[in-house]
Length: 113
Image 1 (cartoon, helix red, strand yellow):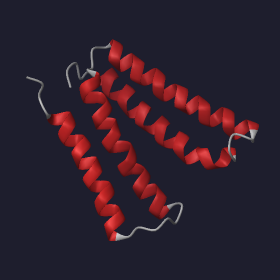
Image 2: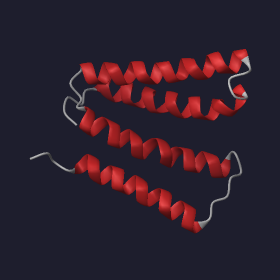
Image 3: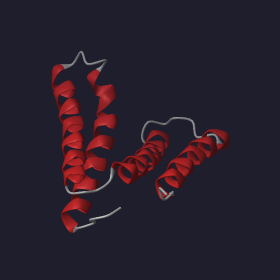
Image 4: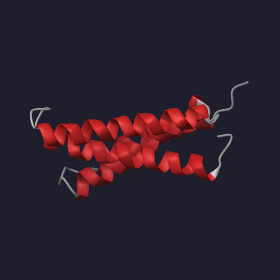
């Protein structure tokens, strides 16, 4: 990723945290029927999109940004799902999810020719 300045790294971290927090808050919305949690969840998704748009404006290429986020967010949610929400963590399920994230990371690493 080009143009990795401190503000861009900060924006990336805020985008990841906002996205993960929104996904954690999603069940609290009860299908977007609870007003407060719904506004909170949507606000976090908007913050995520705002930070991503700022990074793109700074010159960070989408071809690197999206695959990197595609790997980091699911990996974070796997850990949160297993340890916070008590979801099943079978070795096959975790292996398949990690494999999918590895493929996304490999796609991000491929140089366009």
